[in-house]
Length: 289
Image (tube, rainbow, N blue to C red):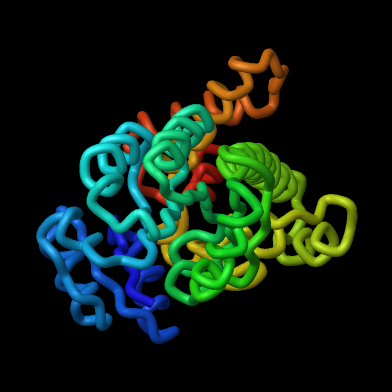
């Protein structure tokens, strides 16, 4: 399949490479010449504009920084430029309203489109083990599933347009809050004189177990390898966690939901990022405790 891939950053670069590995013809675009060079080295055809990349495409996949950019790229450079038969898949994490607006514009122009944000981080993007949560019609999901499966381990239909973004926002609010709680628990355990490996051995098999504990432990040398073992570099940047928490707070306000733990997590990651740690993995917040 001929697939245009727009946005080749830390996540998109690995995702595009996995589409190539699965035998797809990938036409890639990014504003960064360095990112385009990496894509070319991974077997993609590099293009200097979105409009060129989407010509003749059977599908368009995007991984972009925010809703404003997604809206601009699709409105000005994808819709009306890609063939109407092309399936549009936006894998960015953006607000629900923008996702629905862009998908509505695409539908009005005759395109099928899904919002398909991801969970898993850079390592999963490179390994092709992402989880995709997908919003859109059943027909669009059926077309999107095999494309997304080439980049992930799980592809789940969350519901109608915007549902993928809603699921991603809620999921990452859980992640942000549980990581802070996990960091607090390790810090307290140490101050109470517990050996941290012993505490991990206990809590990872008890009711304190969570993904933040057993798959992404914030303590170096404890549990499976994680960014903590690499000076809190790589993985999922604190600035991106803050972005997702802000999206969650905006969504909560729009529907009158009370999210006190999510709100506190946003405050703590705001302070952590403002202190110069935006590029640090989000588990690095343990250093503040």
